Length: 253
Image (cartoon, rainbow, N blue to C red; front, side, top):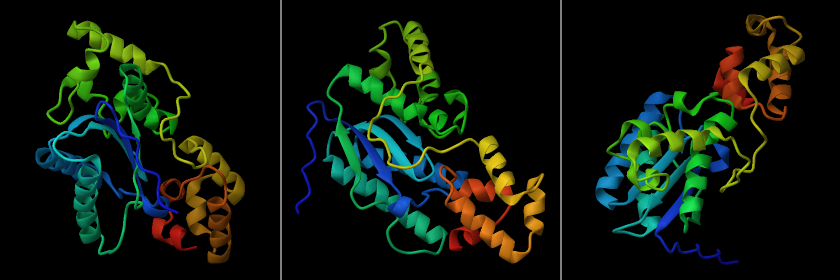
């Protein structure tokens, strides 16, 4: 069956989501995240697209952009190919990293533009990575407060007010409202906080602290990891981070 054609945006603005193949993580560390942001900058110089917002999560990336000199598909291919080349070289791997077909939706009104922008920026809060967006380094929220060469913030801020200071204040207040908006949402179980994860792990492992897990004999350790991997909401890297067990060991079991 042929794929459905993408809906063409009347404004040229799109909300795009790139996902890791088989939900694979796209970033191993902050150096990878920094490289992706740098790749965004390099691609912008070549594609001449306008970037209004982004957010890097563990296994997916959100972008809010306007196509200009080249079609959206060409821009995204340029971005993903460049990052995959770096990622495969760094980790001595080969093959695909991103799901083959990226998701996109047209953003044709000012109201929906602001809805998508807030949705993108609130991803880390809803995933319980941070309690306040200002503390998340890998999204464009702070670019609207501090300015950025990469992000065109004026376009969105002027939707709040022509007065820059009033626009900034309105932007901050707008983002404080945590909503249930669904914009190209991922189909995965709701992630839980590390504190909640620790309680689940201690319950399954029957230990008082995480250090005891490292001293479990191999059979009991492997059984524990298998149970944790099937527990709804627990991410593999979250299990590794909290228990101190190797991510690659957890992934293999």
